[in-house]
Length: 458
Image 1 (cartoon, rainbow, N blue to C red):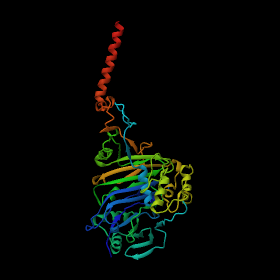
Image 2: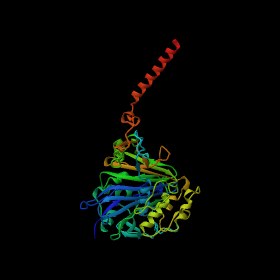
Image 3: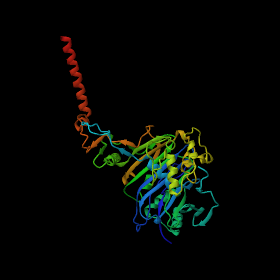
Image 4: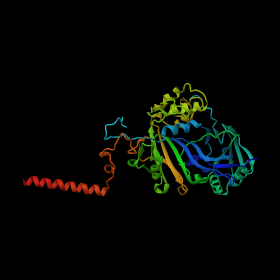
């Protein structure tokens, strides 16, 4: 039997029974013979008053067939199949795009200035009669979920769980043992997933009935290199941030556009910002109310074509049907309720946002008022040293929108027809220190005072 490496908590969502927090995302635990490393995570949280939904997509170097996932869940949590279109649409609609600044030219050149029923199968610990397979392990459910073979089980002790995983082709590194012990002590169930043959991996989502969303960054540490890039899409009726990391901002006055090769220094500024606080930082690069229904001015594209999608919701359906190799039909009906003030109370009410088998918007909407929905994109590049704590998802300090369409402030290698005017020179744009500004202000007041005295003497 082929040994498969374990991604323990690769979508770890824990649960919320008995008031526990919901956890998300985890680490990759591979045997020494497997040469692979997790290089990034893309996650999405939808957090309402009575449930939390986690989506996770892992970026790594290695063969998907060598990976197995073990997801700690709380009793009552369910796992469902998601779609690649979900993260593809979120990425395209929210990623930062930097455009050139409008040029002020000293010369007089020719410059122009410058959903139906879901097909996803939810699995839970109580969905089938338990089967005590002996050795302290009880199997609750076995099923196929898209490209995966899944088993939902419970273990009375960590030795029993390790024994079951080992006998079914999973390999566990020794440093994972304390993590398994902790989950067993917390009365967690587990879902083991493995790819069925050579099929490509697909995102899955885990639904828990209530609780607070938490990123267990300690789990992420396993399987990563010196650092791990993470993008979190946070969905809820307020703009979300990360309570245990520091929100940082780009040095926007230094953002420049190079006209010679149409490049910017955005990535360098982003790296510098995320290195603040020893790397325990995050950037909010996009935040918007009513993100799925709002008409956008950005040209949204699918992975192959520009289809002119007018909103994130439409882009999601366009991308999904393109991935399936067929044309979208009738999805306009699934977009009608995206500006509604009415609470989406349950799964039946959420089906209005499903088109075909594309039901990720539906999953996100339950427990929400669509018109009050926020979507925030949070970006991190966490060094291993910053992965020693879990991180809570909570309300951001600023409840205002953030555009990902950014205009550069400075221009380098200006076109030959557009000579830099004096008022846009580097000297004029140099920042004045607070001390120098204060000195100039005092000098100005003194000059005004002297002028007034001189007028009185006349």
